Image (cartoon, rainbow, N blue to C red; front, side):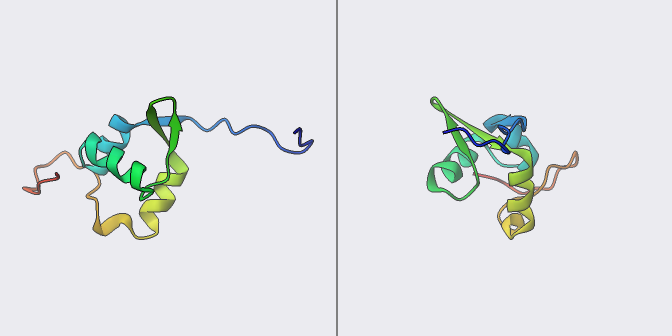
Length: 80
């Protein structure tokens, strides 16, 4: 089906590792959240990919209690 006024999205997709570093959690946690539908994600083959804008919106809408944004200092907080 061809839609005359719609262009394909060209947003860069982030890897699981990139999102994990950004959120301060493990890549395994990010994959688990993606599989459960907790975080907005796209399955590309066998790998998960993430649109930066969608992850930012997810963070703004209540994910802050679940993740600690990356900081260069040690927080003493453990992420499993």
